[in-house]
Length: 240
Image (tube, rainbow, N blue to C red):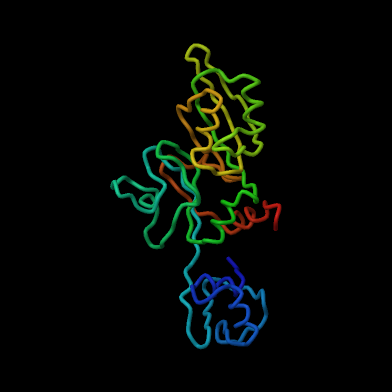
């Protein structure tokens, strides 16, 4: 995947991106042995980049989509020695989860070593959709759907508008299956939203992140995101 030279230099921990731009303009950066002074020049992670004669150690960026199982924690390590999402992926690179899913929540989770990409996905202003399927106790009615759709007050802050669809209701068991689409990522948000209107979430699964679904991934399985998918995620932003 091609990335701007100043981003590569900044990601290597040499300096800030702004300072990297100054170094490029002053002719202090070489790519594959040639001086580059063009801002915005793009290189791959296979390129040999030197700053003032010092070769950078460029870490290849990796992007995974995981179907997180129940009972696995969304952290890089756990003091209680529980299994983490990192344990389910290759150990050749230092990666971390983008956002989190609760211990008992399953479904789509992205992991990467690209900090800028992770920050982009998590920032609410980019409105990256996350689709959840929730099994709740009780029968959801039209008024409940209206309340959820228009936002719920959580910790004195109202959640953004979202989409809610009642998929199934079981009157015998007094349970409903609900699809809810949000673009925020507040802690325990889905559970708290339902709790605020009198429902308990019995089971929760994140079915999709933007256009990325886990239909072909069994619980605990993962796949590598391709460059087209990564680029498409960036294009989804209203703030390109």
